[in-house]
Image 1 (cartoon, rainbow, N blue to C red):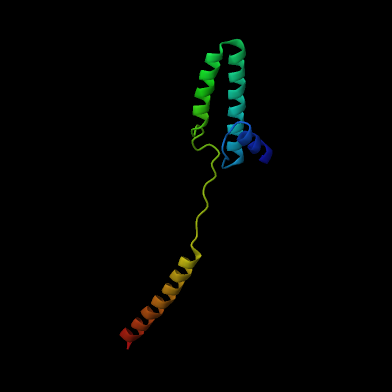
Image 2: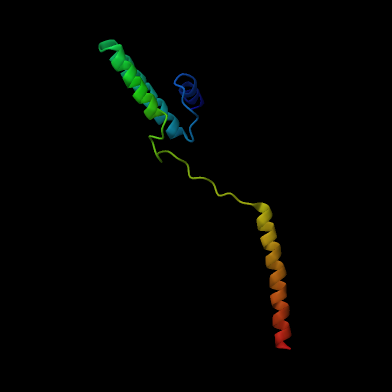
Amino acid sequence: MWAIEQIDIHLFGSTPRASDIRILLSCGFNIGATCAFYALMVHSSVLNGLLLACGLAWISSHNIFVNIGLIKPFKVINEKLLEQKEYADIVFSSRNSDNQQDNGN
């Protein structure tokens, strides 16, 4: 996967992708676009090939795969905030038990 991503970045000018599926999709699209560009340049005019190359470069620079292959983000845990919450729970639970004892007497 690393080699494919490096080819996609350095040969096709792409950007790093988030997952293995997106790396393969992006590299596959870029290989297909390059083959289509080359075939059009050889069998048609240079102008048509350049127009196709510009159009495919524009498409490739956008998020054409939308959510395909995206990994769900991990849950960010703020440990310090959790520690403070636990401490506050301890403090307030002891206050509640003191109030209940006072009301019981």
